[in-house]
Amino acid sequence: MPKHLITLTVNGHPYEIAVEPRWTLLETVREQLGLTGSKEGCGTGDCGACSMILRGPQDERGRLVTSCLMLAPEADGREVLTIEGLARNGALHPVQQAFIDAGGVQCGFCTPGMIMAATALLERNQRPTLDEVREGLAGNLCRCTGYTKIYEAVTTAARRMLEEAR
Image (tube, rainbow, N blue to C red; front, top):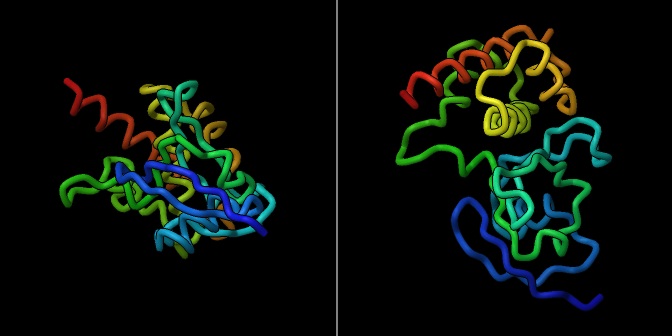
C-alpha cells in the first residue's frame, strides 16, 4: 500500500512521517515516534485509554480524540498533545500531580487517557462542577476503581490551576 507523507507537531516537536492511509494516529505515535504513554485498550473508541488532544485551525483550545479511531492522515498539519507532552521543564502538569496526590491511579492503564481527558476539560472549563467532571471523563473507563479519587484529582487540579493563575 502506498504511503502518504504527513506533517504533525507532536508535543511541540515537528515531524514529517510516511504513513499508510489505514494507520491510526495511535499506531503512528506509538510505533513511528516511540511515544508509548497512550494505550490501546479496546481499539473501538470505547475506553479512552488512547486519548490525545488535537489542535488545529478549528480547534485552537484542543479537542480530545480517541486516537485508536482517528486515521493518521486526518491529523496532517495538526498539533497533537500526548501524555508525554504535559510535563514542562521536569515538572509534572498540575493534572498529573493531582492524580498522584489524590491517589487517582491504580493499575495505571487508563491513567494517561484520564489525565488527557481531564486536561482537555480544564482547558475548556476552569471551574467544573462534579457533574461536569463526570461528563468530561465519561468517555474514559477505569476497571479498577470507583472513580471517586479520579474525580477528586480533577477538582484538585482545577483548584490548583486557578490558584497558580492568580
